[in-house]
Image (cartoon, helix red, strand yellow):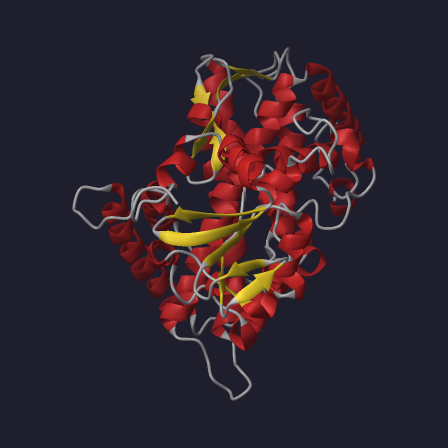
Length: 453
């Protein structure tokens, strides 16, 4: 159980996550206990156990996070609830992020945001500068999240800069030691979260009488009514908007950073993915036309690369639940009030389900994985409702990167490129420092009819 109060938190966030969990699983088996962020926890590291907690026995566990993390997201965010409140809110989030009802209409604008992000990389390519890949991609994923949640005209540039600044401070404090002592990362994060709430509530007040944005999540929450006609308070709406953007920003940027790392490690695979994207590029008159929805949904090799990256990186290593009563599972007693952590990472890296699990092999997704062995977006009623948005923005970015930056190596990872750090989700060490190379016509603007620049 580690040190009093601290538990094994420092070990978890200072070691490679594979090492932390694998050593304990080897010693204790698929069920073991630990203490994380001041909470006693039971870790469950098998597909059957994960399904029991998240699906078949979900009524025995409530979604929860350590209170220190809830404070940084917002206690009313749907992640922390169950029952009617959760189901109604998740329905609204799913509707606002559904592939056919909403996301396909956002596709041209997401392509514009991808190209805008590539402008920054093009500037670095001109001087052969080394950039933090993760840092650059966070800007892109943040812009996409704000677009999907608020809309492109709701948040002005000044407001977006303030939101981005405060999200960055919250992110730095999210996995820090939770002390409110002034000068600490956590104290700064709490203050930044307060400012985020004030900014978002101002947007809510301004948009309450706007009837033209009902497809957006903001509009959906403003129109929310429960079975008795009750509506959401401004604080409840703000908590959910802030939570969705937080979840969408760093997780997607992390996935995309890992995709670029794995492709850089395998030049043959990179060339094959380039070929797939160049065929689409040429079909669109050399980038003169926008990607169509059908083209985005028909990138089989690129899609398998994303799935394998999700497995290898396991951005969400585990999730938190809390036992609402004493629960017995296969002879083990899980005490009421203890946190329960279904462990996705070790399932994804088990040779029983994924042969040679440390090898990056997209071909393993040519057939569907066994049930409950691949859960990059969770499982059950609390599975991530934004998973389609995440995959869409990754596919779009990869297309434009590989078709506009196709000279020589496209990008070169600087340094060893190994190791993992938490920011707050696992990313390559130092955010994957890299140089990006454009094709010889580097003085030509990035070519695409969806490019608003």
